[in-house]
Length: 233
Image (cartoon, rainbow, N blue to C red; front, top):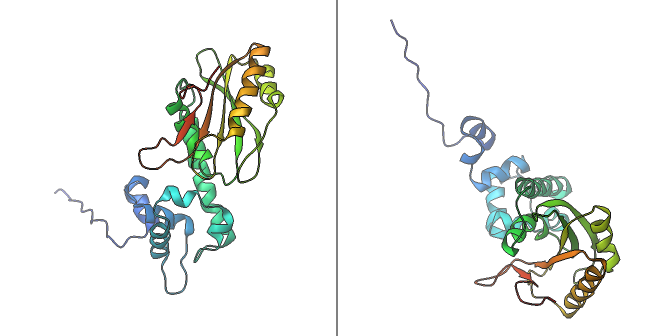
């Protein structure tokens, strides 16, 4: 006599954790994933309703991830602890994306942007990074050179060339973000680029590009490449 087994359907009212355990993380909607991090709601508002409200207010997970701790902690049902936990999750995702591109040749602006954007677009102040590359334009290391105020961060060419020379990199790219989201270069950006070009030529080091990371809008590119725009000596 054979015994048949019966697997009941997954009830739609399952909480996100139970749903993930049964069907995997990919089966969860954005608000359900968010609810797992928030864990609890507030009086009169469930954690899933709270998550849905956050996403509706900010428009997307990406926009939510661009908020800083102070902004998130002031949201309904959040506080410092939940804000830190949520931003830590976004940061882990950004780093995982970058790790997944290890070994990729960073030989064109779009690829460089995809490599850097998951982390750099969330910065509320300007950060300047130097990407050290081997002979095939594959990443050796990323060094943060400086970070500054809301509008600009400055770096002397020796601060950029120092790690390039000490790590014996074949070449390098510099990149910095514009917190405003507009990647168009300022006159200061152009001046810094020119000085680094001169210093790199003097030291006989290959300077491949300077990329400004923004967010773009409409048909506008979310980045600006000095080399791609023929601002290169």
